[in-house]
Amino acid sequence: MATEGIEAVFLETHNWGRAARFFQGLGYELEFETDHNSGQFRCGDGPYVFIAEVPEDREPRTQIVFKVPDADAFRADSAVEVVTPFEDTHFGTRLMTVRDPDGRLWSLQAPRKEQS
Image 1 (cartoon, rainbow, N blue to C red):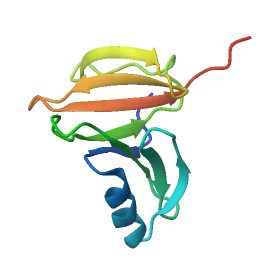
Image 2 (image 1 turned 135 degrees about the vertical axis):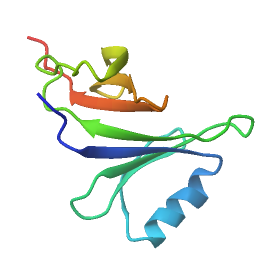
Image 3 (image 1 turned 90 degrees about the vertical axis):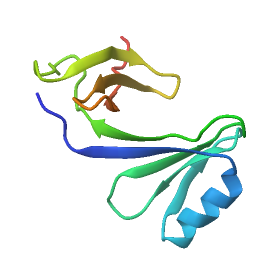
């Protein structure tokens, strides 16, 4: 099973309010906001953008997230270095980290299966 393209872009910022206004100025609509200076935006049917505020002493990161429909069925090709296998997240998904040949880290995200 392969990925299904880009699902999201995860951005860190030093100023949640300014970042939110910037993306709204580009036509993104706020889908939800958390109570800890973060939130999710979307523009049309494209990938969502999730923005989270980080402390000033931390360099803001950007992470592209690829969509995987089923974490249990996904098998990374031998050309893909798996850094961390799929793990449940606190925000309701399963996340895997892989490294490309140039050392960049990429995230793969799948829905969490409902527990019976």
